[in-house]
Image 1 (cartoon, rainbow, N blue to C red):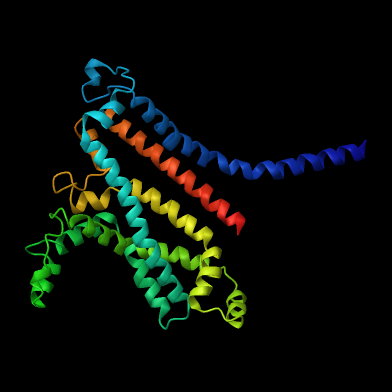
Image 2 (image 1 turned 90 degrees about the vertical axis):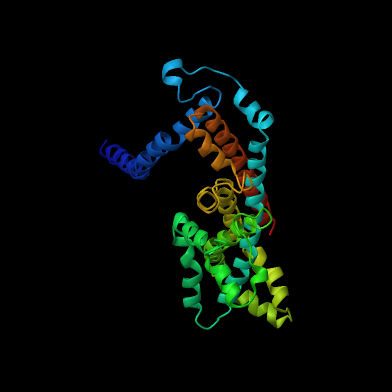
Length: 306
């Protein structure tokens, strides 16, 4: 009898030890449900209604797919906003990933003063988007901006541009500002990945006669699959929901040339068209989830194969 009691006490103690860590999940789970899951589901439901600023007096009515139909058929600006969002996501990732990887490799190779360079390159990524946007909006001003003033001083006035108001230049300016801010962050993730690669792999490759680019192709890139996946997922998520940098730099202009989904959603919500705004956000949520899942699955398969 005493043995049974002791065994029972041990089982209870073991179960308590197993259950105890699970209590730490309760508060994060409750916060996640209250502040993300529930509002997301509610937003999807509201996207099928005519919810607007007058709904307090007229009530909220179910309209089915009317909001989505209007987004894709009645107003071509919304479709262009979706296309702008997708193109920004692709181009901004391409601009940041390759230079960030090269910089990470250079710093990993034992460059003198690499600690200072890491700090300087990472520093822009911790600055607020609004501050960066305001600073570069001033720098890129056609009449009083520092960039055009420097070009004038160097007798290169022919290179002056209306950086934020010329249809042919404005997106290049946005990509440049975005790259200036984001390359250091992407580089840091690549550096973390590079630090996990054993140096013996490179030493063995050198003994076998592999040159620098062969080592990059056959050792570095395959071993960096995890870091590449992280950067892609973060970059795609950021690109699809970009708002601050575009809103501050151009406010969607000139005309609607730089409008993206989030700026249109903001305008709709500000004008009291809450149902349309949530419909646009629901489309954005669906695109983000689909692309994110596909990227993770593709990269995971490659990682398993390697």
